[in-house]
Length: 194
Image (cartoon, rainbow, N blue to C red; front, side, top):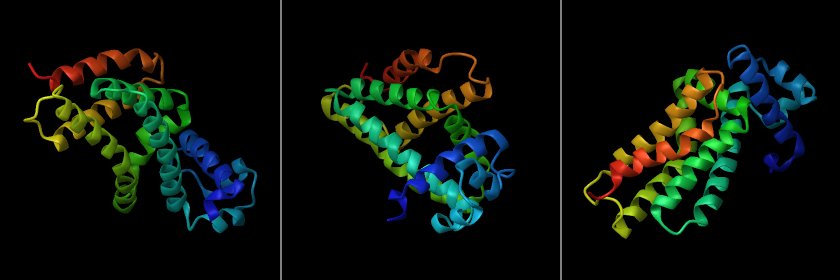
């Protein structure tokens, strides 16, 4: 399988750096190849084109992202703990990789419709984690049962996404992790039985 070859990861990591620095549209395959330390032609052994690099990069990084969040959630016993773990893991992972934060929060938004469809497909696994936490909270009796899981998922993801985007837009001048508890409290307050 192509993805297990070492150069695949090299190219993916180089793509994150190059796209973060130059923007997606100004990031030629040759720049990515040079940064990865491979010949231009090597890129095409792994990817069809620049769009394929972007989608593969997002799939690979999101897969790692979800895996890490699943590990964090598994250590929690209730929905509020799982939600806090998800928020903390989300913010931690992006605050530790500034280039990836720039790519996911800014560059992926500028892609064409077909790319966005691929990206949305990759995001489904993450959104499923959010759904599961909300469903757990309803089953536990911690969260209200008369809420729309779909709407709550959009609100949670949207809140996390916008918080990170704002941090990126402000050139990461403050500690993103300082937002974890307040974001968690606001979301839990909205979901909790009164």
